[in-house]
Length: 404
Image 1 (tube, rainbow, N blue to C red):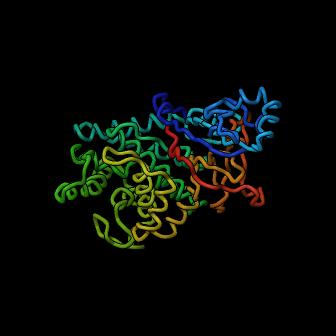
Image 2: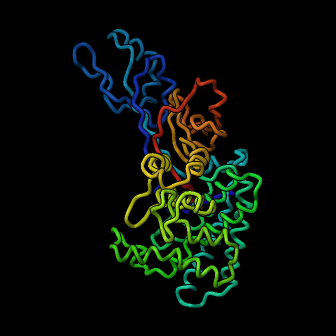
């Protein structure tokens, strides 16, 4: 099941990764490919420029033998080079979607159909035309999502991007369903029923927002006290709507009503704390906050997954059930799928999977080799199997949620 990102989004998701390094003359041919340049004027002892900054290494490589002799005469043994690489999401996605890659992801048509069904239900609630069958269809979508969760190893390649402020609530509902289902599956691997409840509850969790005015939902600044009091009612509205249209499962209803309760007891609407909050609502709370932090909104840019996890652990931990937050950390990893990382040998890759409970050594799909040249064949490194000889130096970019 493959994801196809919209072409407009692909064009936006491009960044440059410039590498500056000093190489020995004997290494010149290794780096003589397009986008590699001399980064500093090469000057002889008399102050004359022998090779100007900006010269393509490919041109120098054609005359490398004579050049070596000339530079050695002047006591020059190395030169500074600049490697310019433009990395874009379409290239990376094509590699991920390679038939040999083995990654399973949510079907793009199913994802878009689910978002459209959520949108349709919200509009019907707003104009008074919603029927029990409309909600039943969403419940069925949630049950199907639960089956997808059971077959899909990596959550980050299933989550969708919000492309407009009007779309946020609908895509967010799908994402919360997926994250909640994944967390439930990790916490209770033998209990398929709770995975289904969380998947359905996630889709329906913000149903009450259909009764909140758009000017409050999409306000670019902070809500006033009175506006926030109105916003808080969406949890109660949602539970009432779900019950009116045939949802009877108390666990699903607890997700809708309780996903803004906080483990410390300072949430709403019932100001519950710790185990007084249902386990389903506690799971949905973690999923809801993580997706909100990593989503683009009219009033904020998206936070990358690693920073979102860090914020939840360091500044917001009192809000969450510790065991569920730990499960999110393990699920996402310290290097979340979608992170573009620099490895210790200088190569560049994208994290495509976590390795069980080993948070430091994920699976990395190489994009640029150690000479910063684009790899020609798909190669996936499981860093657990490298005896610490290769490790992650740093995250240099985060493609985050992959879109659908």
